[in-house]
Length: 420
Length: 80
Image (tube, rainbow over all chains, first blue to last red; front, side):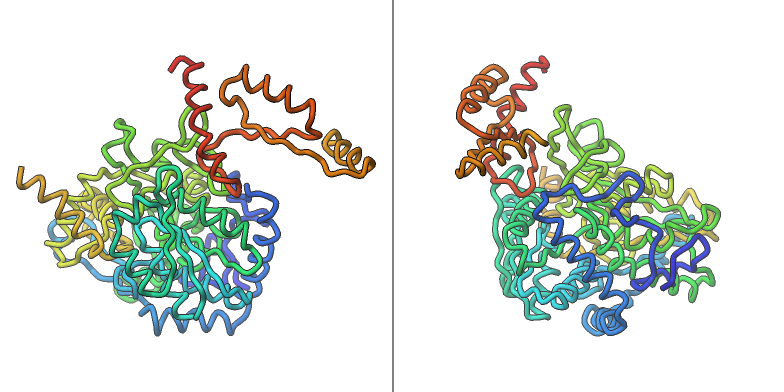
């Protein structure tokens, strides 16, 4: 088995490759781990063993790759944004088009992988948590494809805000359970999904949607999403004659799309490593307290079984996050991102709601592409970054999802402004 | 840990189930929590004390719902 080293070509760092981290205890430095009730430890051990066996099994790897190719539509395009590049007058901007995947976001890369592991383990029932509904839809889709029973937990507030995705999940045969506890959003849905898993651990597989949670989830989700970064290396080599760009930009909620595009490049020697820029939801601005910038404005703590940067108050209680984008509305950032930040391997910057809304419109008009509001945060950072770089330099931005789901919300926000 | 093991061993020797009580720390305030704990310990073999947290894992939703009052109490104490 290939081990990723500072010299490994990024394209080779795949499902069968072993990244340097996490260690055998599931730690990324001091982050990650397994802060869960004892009842879940055997289930996590069982999952880890099943996954380790699966990724060494060529039949599993082939079925995963074939499903990504034939069903998800991979590889996703690496698109040179000519108009945007000319408009910004700096670095050449490429968009990794995860929005063109089946179901319209990167989330499906992970749910297909985990559903295949679930089937391999003989689990007939899968559960998932969802915020905006993108992961829930991707989980329900994988469950439909592989004939698994599926239940999705979703905060009551998100059920109200994302009614269309609730209907999509039900159409796909999933049961959607509204969660009324706490802030009635993603973190509460996650609590409820973990509670279900503790209760039904024998026949149930928990399809976790981001690079958070107890080990081995951050590793599992990272490995399945790293197909994004591997493809970037191959595609960029073909069009630019270089596998490694100067900068990679991606939005970060829990951090799965960002890890997917960062990880194959993150462990390169510092001299070869591109700038990796994670864009957090700055909400109404960090000073307002209404944001989801867990790295920029958070501290280290434990949430959902993992040690990481998170938003909490003086008593150690989790603070409610805020973002115009439901997918970034999570009060923590995965342990591998926490490690990258601490080690200086990646940078994390906030983008406000207003900047993201502006970028949403800029990309639509410049390229005829409507990004998800989550991805619009990354677009906003590219608008700032590209003009500061040379014309021979290259930025790759992860366009993690399409914006159809956000059109109604944006028109409401913008319409009110125009009408005022 | 040995005091917990001893409590269960005693119950087993006496041929009965252990009474494990649960109270939330500092609820509804420090004084009344200590009063309740003292009273409960006259009857319970083991007292489990829960620290209120906004996002508990694998415990009943009631521990989460309870997180609010003590945290407000804590705020009141620290003068915020």
